[in-house]
Amino acid sequence: MTDFFGDIAPVSFDPNGDGDLTFRHYDPDALVLGKRLEDHLRFSVAWWHSFAWPGGDPFGGQTFERPWFGDSMDDAKLKADVAFEMFRILGQPFFCFHDLDIRPEGDSFAESADRLDAITDYIGSKMERTGTKLLWGTANLFTHRRFMGGAATNPDPDVFAYAAATVKTCIDATKKLGGENYVLWGGREGYETLLNTNLVREREQAGRFLCMVVDYARKIGFDGTILIEPKPQEPTKHQYDYDVATVYGFLKDFGLENDVKVNIEQGHAILAGHSFEHELALAASLGIFGSIDMNRNDYQSGWDTDQFPDNVPEVARAYYEVLRAGGFSTGGTNFDAKLRRQSLDPMDLIAAHVGAMDVCARGLKAAAALLDSGELEAARAERYAGWETSDLLTSDLASIEARVRAGGVDPAPRSGRQERLENIWNRYV
Ligand code: XUL
Ligand code: CO
Image (cartoon, rainbow, N blue to C red; front, side):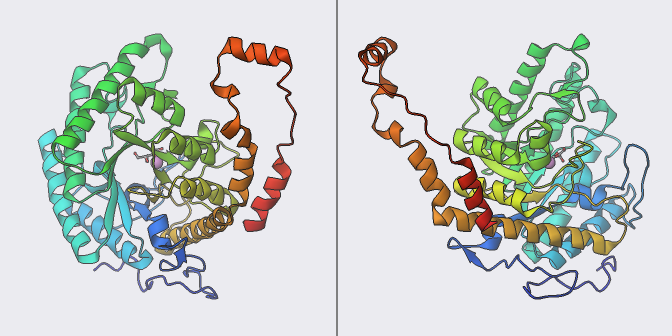
């Protein structure tokens, strides 16, 4: 036991509660569309932002003082102790990690790998005791300077090898902890300037890397889902996993569209010039929807500020698409979100997650009610009713021309009814 969270008690559901740390909307056991809310939302805490991030921004360094900030394995264990204390307070079912979040880097690759093994033993026994599960593991292939020119796409073959070896140890660790997914976010897989970049070769390297990852995961019997997390830029000027459509094209190119899905982050979707729901709907329709990172950007600065969600209508749109896709299978709702740097206190960490979980619960319930009413889906089906009956869609150009010329075809403009549908939407949210 640590005393980091003091006397903060486990958060419970009370719709009329008046305390700061109460769920007013998230009742894990409530049934929505026949499924427990906890099983719909599958909340996950991100180890990196909650326990490893020191509170810096581009203009200033560390603002948080945490007793586990340091480079030793004892610090890493204390960090894990505090993490599991927070999980007990929140009661969320999952967490996620990068290797670098949970263990200090060693002086050699072998030492780093041994430390990962040791800390995952330590975390694994806590998971067994508490029942908290791993949503996904991932490798940090972007912080260390060796990765400044890319990991899989680095022009130096030794960096490619270092990245591949690192991912192998992280898949092993994820499997060992029963992780339900393995994520690859290519933060440095892109370029800073086209003036020194061989686009074709770099893309091939990324494809080759991903094929090796899929092969290895299957070979060792990892039965979780492998996920790519699209992001258009930041840290690099241009990233190869730009958005869902780009990732799909990439997967098709390397024959991986049945092996890899996507982890879609709200803020990344916005950075790519899309809405979150667009990315979700597209992934679902392409058969590659996997999981979500539910954290928003600041709409004025445009940066990837990784803030906790606070906007119910916005998350309702997202969950509508998740539910329409049939809900999560191995995926879940990961808060890849960090506190603001002035939020110094342990209670801020709890308040951030409690608020975010409540926002998501409200959004999901609204989306479920609307989906259940069938109102939007009936309008959608009606809009495409002609497609069900017309033989014009499957004909060929010359026969179509003949029929149009003969006068048997009469295009009749019809209202799209957008405002009516927006009004329906607003009745539920
Ligand atoms: C970066 C980001 C990552 C990934 C995991 O923008 O979202 O934290 O989620 O590497
Ligand atoms: Co993310």
